[in-house]
Image (tube, rainbow, N blue to C red):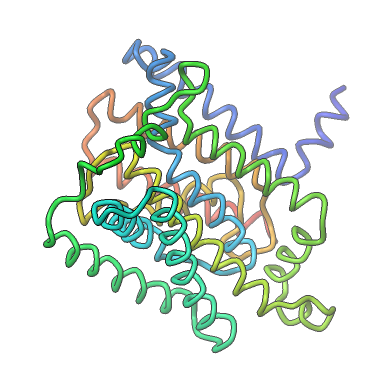
Length: 318
């Protein structure tokens, strides 16, 4: 038994799962002493509803990071998508049409990122920093047009407020389905092996016949699509918008990926690790809020987590 456990812990991913589960258990025990509310069903509902949108961003971000790339634009694209779908519905467009058009626009933004990065060989940090700034600015411009709330068809709010079995938010159920779908895709096809091969050595992957540019373009487009979906969901949940919505979400998503064991250098990591990272960060933020830790200290703590995750990941990849 000890031999089997040692062999399991020798695996990078399994070792990371054990660490995250230990951290989660320690948080549940520690924060519950400070605030009995922390382990209640109502807090579970609140926490999972709040981190579902960032969790969606983390799901697609994992795939991008696995190829050795990064996308800093997702928070701004999410906010912009929320403004777009809200504006379309206020203008009288049916919910289904507004959602489909918004998802197409968000996918188009991701495709622009992908085209510059994959086919023009531009640095992903520079490209996505540019789109992040541009679309955040557009959010402030759209905000001047008036508040985005009070839609003609109030059934739009049903998804954000809905609960499966009375306590599981629909958005969290969707997050689980997205992860399950991507997990199956990664395991049941060449997709997972190919994107990890790109992250490990892009040139070697191209020589082996992997369509590196096509994969990059596809993943950034998918990242835009998911950011659009997250924007629609968060508008449905919050029932109103500010132009600063989603500011910093890109870094939260990256933190969840790195904490889950996805290497910032690419080529290593799993979706299960990212999912556990989402839960740990979500509950960590909830616990810090419940015990009234300042937002400045929270940012510092998350920054340290990013740094430690990068350092540990770099050491373990050698």
